[in-house]
Amino acid sequence: MTDWLHDSVAAMASPGPWRSFRHVFIVSFIDDGKYYLLSALVLWLLLHVVLKKRLAHRAIGGWPTRADVGREIMYSISTLCVITALNAGILALVVGGVFEVYAEPLKHGLAWLLLSLPLMIVWHDVYFYWTHRLLHTRWLFTRVHGVHHRSRNPSPWAAFSFHPVEALINSMVVPIALVAVPLNEYVIAAFAIHQIVRNAHGHAAVESLPRGFARHWLGGRFVTTTHHHLHHETGRGNYGLWFTWMDRLFGTERADYFERWDKATAPRPSP
Ligand SMILES: [Zn+2]
Ligand SMILES: [Zn+2]
Image 1 (cartoon, helix red, strand yellow):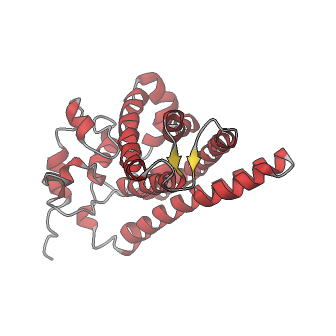
Image 2 (cartoon, protein in one colour):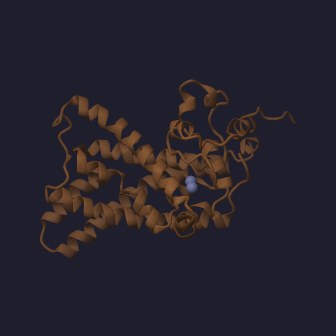
Image 3 (cartoon, rainbow, N blue to C red):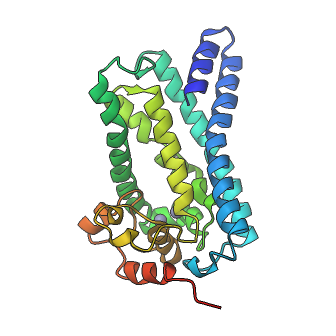
């Protein structure tokens, strides 16, 4: 994010609007695409190729098919185009002075620099939970969110596998925040990296966290791969993105979560 921001501000300032837009598009696409490619590729290679046999007993449901992976990658490329177009719009508003994305880390104080990332993550979680519930209403599910749910057993490549409308909805977290507050460019970059790494991990189809995690006083507050996998498998409950608190508060956590967690994290049967 930071590289493309610097390069793109320079490009916007140079003559030729089409050249500038094309530059922003290419740089942003490569930058966001790089995070997606790296996260999904590393997790997929590790969990679905190298360790597949060793982790077979930790498969939550089934494994994704080749067709699933191919479709997830195609929709993710489409999502990257949506994100990139939106980034160009954000950039235009930053250059125009409407949004403030600042480079000097301490410009708004150390407290804001440190607080803004956790606040952005919590805001993302709340925003996602409610938009996700909305996307599960019949009309929107049939036309929009069903694309993401075509993966009953998702792979890490499903992290960006959305209908373009959902891609746009999910990408509004940063611009909506920028309406209210200034954000440091490194905070935005860290936010983007956190979201793609955890998103790819949440779609891994195999539980990689330790057995004690889901019942731990702290670990239990985080959404696990099993938590989100059950959402894909059934299309009901477990709507949260990063934390379990919204599902618990509104009674939407699946009743079989711990049972399936125990099954997925049970010790490997001896040969
Ligand atoms: Zn999902
Ligand atoms: Zn859903």
